[in-house]
Amino acid sequence: WLKSPQAQSTRAVSAAMAGDRTYFRNGRLVPPGVASGAAVPQEGKQAEVLEEPEALLPTARETLVARLAADLGLAADGQPRGLVLFDGMCRLCQIFCRFAIERDPGRHFMFAPLQSKLGKEVLQGFGFPKDLDSVVLYSEGQAFIKSTAALNVIGKLDSPFRVLRYFDWLPRGFRDWGYGIVAKSRYSLLGHKVDDEAGDEALKARLLDTWTPSAEDLLHICGS
Image (cartoon, rainbow, N blue to C red; front, side, top):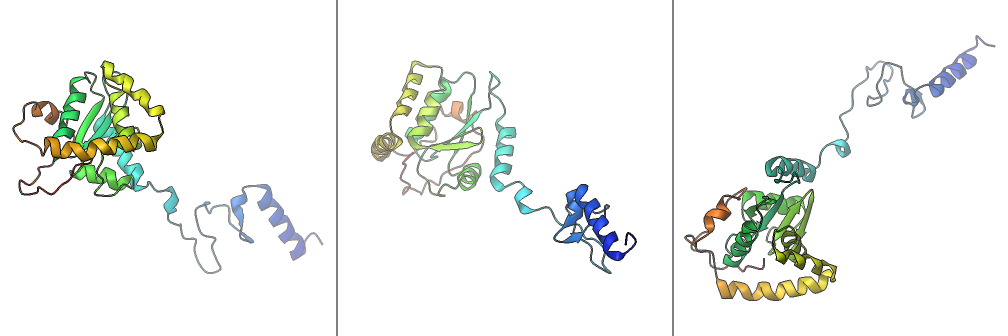
């Protein structure tokens, strides 16, 4: 009986299950030389190596995060830098950026217009609308908008204004409501970007990407 085909098959199955389980898949024995990522060879065919599953490949966001980490680098204290995306046609948005730069000696933030190539990539990578009308803060693999973004930036500044970050304990809906009220009025009050506005050099030195608005585009409404 020990030499019968049934006994030999039983011993083969037991040996396969006692060893690497990859040698017994889908009801078939896999030869020891076939890797776990390979197809089970059939009669008359050689084993074909399967392609790496898509789930194991880097996603578009993971690729973007890795690139941003390399491009942004580290601040003076060794912490990863953040990226602030602002409306490139909004004068008040640029005033806010320069306000932050003047109080950020450790260079914790870099900047880029929302309309720039990098800005569009970040919006797409994090699932935001391509016409998003809000300041955006990218920090260590996460992206924040509206009041949360603004408070996180202010909270990093070397200034007494950093205490404003404690407003983040308020409900986000309430904070964003207040943010929206200010956003709707400040565009009409301060207008578009002025190319020769004093202080722009400080901002240009921190830009990770640039964008030049068209002088004829006067229809943009700044909500950031």
